[in-house]
Image (cartoon, rainbow, N blue to C red; front, top):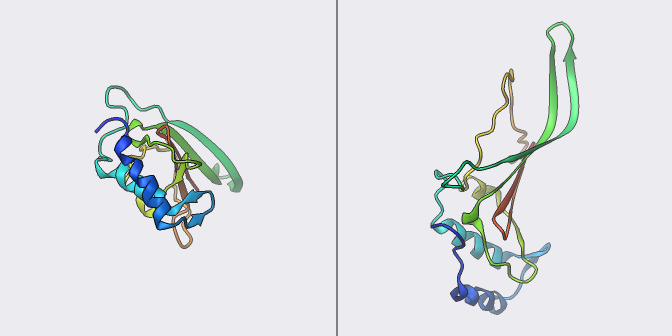
Length: 151
């Protein structure tokens, strides 16, 4: 299913949120966020890339936290950084509800989305930072823009 999965018929979700009472978590309504994500992912296929007729453009950014373990003998070094990726997935558009224009995805739901297969050429070894839980953030914008950050 291409485009937004929301229609005017989904206006009832707003009424349900009001009747259920607003449990606020930061700037978003937890009930509304859960229902929006559920509807977005109902027909979503993470095996299909976002732009069916052309390649998906992924913007990349790196914020270096530390540069360490430098060895002049072996010409090795280690980096600790945030790896930021952004792209547009029109299948994830949703109608903003009041102040709710961005959704921070729960960590368990991140694996339900298409993610770019980005890699670093000539790297000797790489790992993702995970102390008690994976250290990542995925935020959806109502326009279908996705921002994904890992450490």
